[in-house]
Length: 434
Ligand code: SF4
Image 1 (cartoon, rainbow, N blue to C red):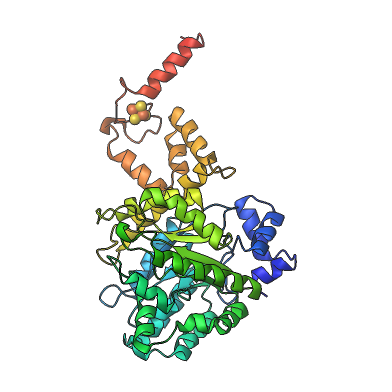
Image 2: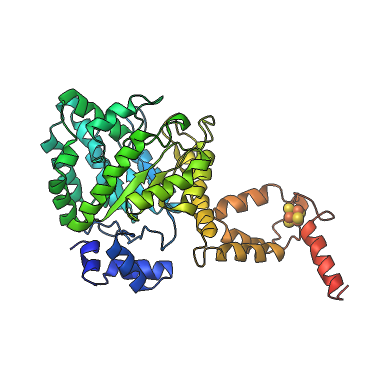
């Protein structure tokens, strides 16, 4: 029985109870959210040791880190180090997006090593097994890969089932065309073979597999805009309408479903995009990449995208896919994975504060109290990246003050000009203590 099927029957599963305990919300809230489809708990029972993580607006915004080798870079050992780094810095979900090589072996090692739910894009393995020959991809073969990955324990899968042949024509008028890897594969297959999307045509069969293993489907946005000029266009929203139809079919079948979203979007269009998805997909958790709010900052796209992600989390997204400084330039290395995760932990938290999620501001209040008290150790405990904050603080502490952690100033202003010290003196003055 899937989490959705259990919830529809009013059963609180161990996973729902774990989500409730971890989030500080009631079990009844989690039950109602899962039953409505507004929350998913991607967890395949075959993934041993996998924790239950809720994705939805009733709980904290989550982040995903994309990992996986490319045909030209990295390998199993590198990707496992990145996995450890991503999890160590707080990634809630990870995806293995490996292409080329022995993908099944990397996925197995990642599943064994990851207590976080793991996602894949099955068409990547399918095409890798066919040496990149898109037109030769038989629908049965693709569905077979989906089945095998579900049996192995993959917790959620991106399936580009809403991209139809007619949408491809619309996208060809764009400046950047199709920038989704999976979307471009499905589009080429349809046009080369003169057929409709096989995942859409055989969706009932696919849902049977997903339901049998409680794999959550993440409906891929094959036509996510790849530049600001293509944002919010007819192609993007035509696909979104089909995703809304697929959401309904998944819910009726008892399959947990979330929806993927853009992409490159000007900041002022993010709210509209979040609200439109919420309406069209009837509150299905929205899983967004970025959004990237300007096209002109390669090398800094983790910052660019975390700006968009903060707005997305504020206005409707529930899961943020990180973007690293390597975006548009190459496969991220270990340090770039760390930077991407930290940037998106910040975005998710800032979004939760902005939307008024109960308790979201508590860590900020603990931090400000520690700052006012010059309690440096507590400040680092409250920090999203405690080690990074401590390292930076130590780097410019006055050398003659040793390892003392009672400094009542820092190197930014120095003791005489420290505004927090001055403010303290003013308060003491007004309280009659000086
Ligand atoms: S020295 Fe300046 S930056 Fe440092 S704690 Fe005081 S006011 Fe803040």
